[in-house]
Length: 117
Image (cartoon, rainbow, N blue to C red; front, side, top):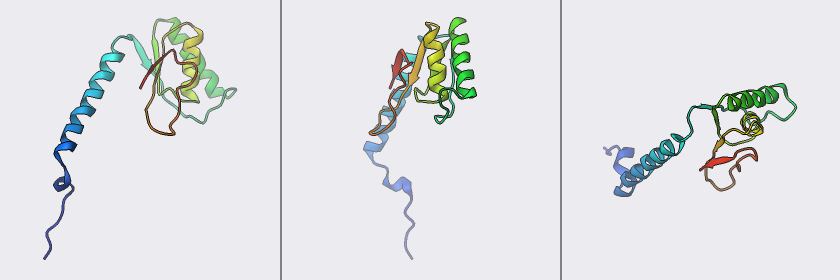
């Protein structure tokens, strides 16, 4: 009879410290975003292109939000998120892109004026 090996058996001290680093990143993110209030977060398809009806609507929504004092927060990518950032940026508002740092990942779209990684 063989003993079962559970994933928990393979957790090391390094792994437990990694959890604290991840929690610290969450705290840093919340602290950084707390400066931009009120804010609305918009996420959507990256496949929507300029000229599409949805792109134009997202751009208009981003613009209206910025004109009414809201920061616009997106994932910083293309498509719907780019459109919302473009609208907010064109209105002179805060256009925030939250981006991830991974090799070969997307770069923030050109319409973010605040980028958090």
